[in-house]
Length: 142
Image: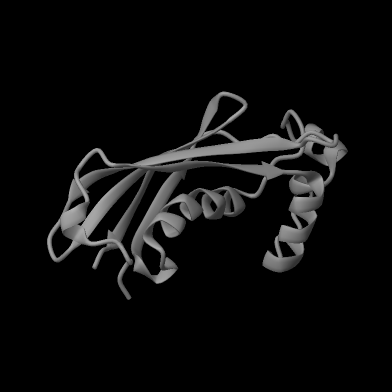
């Protein structure tokens, strides 16, 4: 599949619309159910602190999935993402309150590749700290 955006209409440096994604403890419980990842560091504050974490943390794959939404929304077709990878640099800490945490994601076209593809570099932060490193996607454009 290809994106709805034409390759010739995109320049290196094009910024994708930034997005923010709220994360609450309820979000983590729903994600645990959907993913089957019930590790207590994602829902049990006492356990998370006993293993050295500051509090409950979001699933890394959840954080990764939220970040790529910036690219799939821009591309108009999730199947246009042909490669995606990240390094987990810091956890998203999710306090037990009504607000939870916020994952803020920005992205820009970093390179035009062969065959109508572009590389998009993403920046994902939470509480002012970068939570994903080397976050890159390759997108097949029209």
